[in-house]
Amino acid sequence: MRGLSVVVSLLLCWCAGCLSSDAPAAKAWTLDAAPSAPAGAVLEGAGKAAFATTRVGTVAVDAPYDKTPFVVRREDGSVAFDHYNVFASSPAALLRAPVRNRIGADGRFGSVVNPSSVAWADAQVEVQVTDLSLDCRTAGRRRARAALALDVVKAGHGPRVVALQGSGSGEADAAEGDYARAFSSAVDAALAEALKSLKAPVGEAARAVETGRK
Image (cartoon, rainbow, N blue to C red; front, side, top):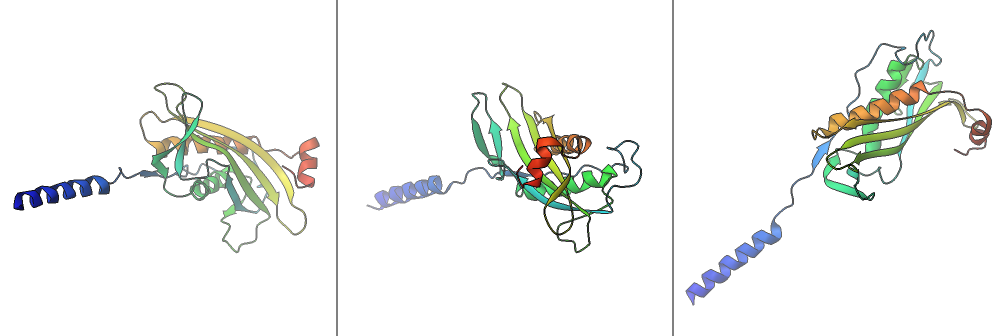
C-alpha cells in the first residue's frame, strides 16, 4: 500500500510539473532614437527655422501594428503575431523619442517640446503609422518595415490648419535578430523620408484638410 502511495505521489508531482511549466518569456525590444544630426540636415540650405517652437503631438499607430507583439508577414501572405518578440511598450509610446530627435535635427522646427510641456508652440507634428511589421514573406529573409505620414499643424484656436504634409517608408535587415536596431533603422528612414517630402497640401488634399477629412 505504501508503494502505491509513493507512485501516486510521483505521478501527481509529474503532472503538476507539466501543467505549471511556463512558456519561454517573451523578449522585449525598444525603438532607439537616432542620434541628433546638425540642424538643417534634412532641409538643405535651410535658413531661419519656419517655426519657433514645435510640439510633438499625436502619435497614432494603425491596427494591427498598435499592439506590443510583432506583426509578422508570412510567406503565404497571411499576417500573424509573434508573442515571443514584443515591443517593450506600446509602439506609439516608443515612437515619441525618434520623432522628437528627427524633427529636432531637421532645422525647420525650432525648439521641440513634448505634449506635456506647458511651453507655447506655434506648430505641432502629428504622426500616423501605417506599417510596423516584420516581413518574412521571402524564405530565409527577415526585414523590419515602417511606413508613416506626418502632418505639421499650425497652433491656435479655431479650425485645424495643416501647414505641411509628408509621408515616408523604410526597411532594414533583421536577419541577425537584433530587432531593436532593425526597427529603429526602419523607423528613422521613414521619418527622414517623410520630413524630406513635406509640402503644403494643394488641390483635393487641401480641400480635404479644410473640411476635416484625411
